[in-house]
Image (cartoon, rainbow, N blue to C red; front, side, top):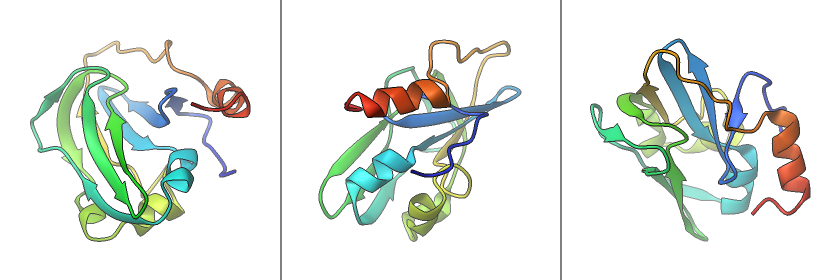
Amino acid sequence: MANRPANVRFTKTHEWVRLEGTTAVVGITDFAVEHLGELVFVDLPSKGKKVGKGETLAEVESVKAVGEVYAPLAGEILEVNAGLANDQTPLAKDPFATGWLAKLKVAAGTKLDDLMDVAAYQKHLDAGGN
């Protein structure tokens, strides 16, 4: 198990999000990366695209499968981790820092109360994680 940071929240579909004011940094968890296997491609959204909560944000392809990444909250794409298109190593090695996927502009006062903290996410994984 990776050292999951305490300042992020998790979805049941293995995305993580960290709020920095009105910017939400989004990625996929170490569990998702591990289960996808060897990564070969990341398809990231365009800057300025608006996404709704639960909508497909990105796709991560591995030699085994294509995994959809869902937006854990609604927002507008401010920035994507463009380097991941050519090199997926940061996603595999450090999914909570250098392996982030996208940054979203979210409404002021956005809360993550409906998402799991680290302990709840670990319980979700221990219960089968699907």
